[in-house]
Image (cartoon, rainbow, N blue to C red; front, side, top):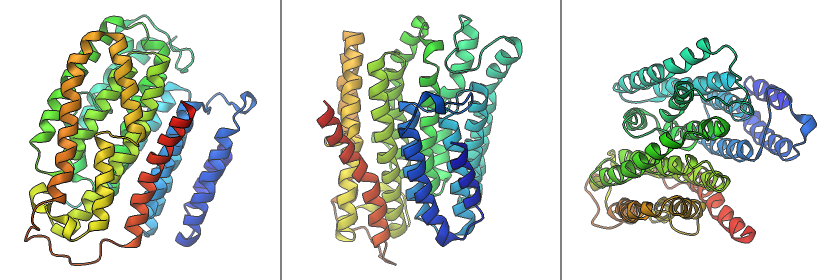
Amino acid sequence: MLKILLIFLIMMIMKNKIKNFMFIINILMLNFNLQNFYINKISYIFMSDNISFWITNMSIWILMIINLMENKFNFKNMIIFLTLFLIMTFNIWNFLIFYILFEISMFLIMIIMIIWGYQPERMEAILYMIFMTFIFSLPFFNSIIKESNLSLNFFFMKNNNMFIMISFMLIFMIKIPFYFIHIWLPKAHVESPVFGSMILAAIMLKLGSYGIMRMFNMLINLNKIKIIIISMSLWSIIILSMNCLIQNDIKLLIAYSSIVHMMILMTNIFMFKMKSMMSSMLIMIGHGLCSSVLFFISFIMYKNSKSRNILLNKGMINMMPNVMFFWFISCMNNVPAPPSINFMGEIMCMMNLISWSKLTIYFLIPINFFSSLYSIMLFTIPFNNKLSKNNIMTSNFSNNLNFIIMFLHLFPLMMLWFKMIIII
């Protein structure tokens, strides 16, 4: 692992042409290293298991795709630097080091927003992120200072102190984000450049859910809080789904739909069962790929119409029929509908919820209805209707590179579905 991290650092001083090649080679090396995982390869700091293996691979896959979008030296270095920190974050086993790397990764997203963002309001979104992170980190640091004997290794993190458990949980719930403390995410998405939104939705939201999954041993006895969180999450999914129906900004709609999927993921994680961990992994990977491609295609439409308003982007089928094919597949994966691992993950999640309590079926019916409704609306308005006067093709956005980027997002979604079918 340390050898691969060293190669990432060396890549930062290479020329762009060599850098792209080395990036792919390094990904293959990392993949082989994680697959050939034996107990004698474990250090006290870095270690990998099935959860970190799949999340690391998904993160590197997304960053590899984003690496194709720009050819500037500073951009390449930023992506490599972010990849380096994410690999360490997902393979670290000390909670404090994990939290530090976790916050450094979020800090890099803020830098991306500052440098590559295109609206002055981005500073307000960054201040929201800093303020929310600071407020919800204070109880965590207070717990560490007071409890000097507290083990910070993920394997041995067991504590009966309610305040400590909640303080550890809060720093991840703000990043998932949990309803009521989610306001920073739509602002961050709107003010980010397209690759910033792709990284934020596909990878950064997974850091929060990954952290809670790692706290399995610590939170498994929180029965009362578990019931409250699952109940609030189910209510908030319905509210957020209805909120998606009244959005006219495509980017905001995709951002709120991301929160809906992450809240579904949260209900599943807080059941603290092995089956729920498996379905959570499927939702995380599926949502990461699906949300990233949705933001990318919405950016292509924005470049044509010069607006994110969904009504001003109608009739895109007349201008970009090939892109609309990928838009259809992406929106159906967002429902989710087969063939996609999102569908498999959410079906397993619903089965887990119903087995936990039969009353959850009264929540699941409206959740399925509204989530299908806003995903279909997201597809039909840009696809159908007459062409808006704003949509004047100024350059060829339906180029080969865009098709490669869209294909590389959607191909793993389909292939992982067929792999799951074969396994089952």
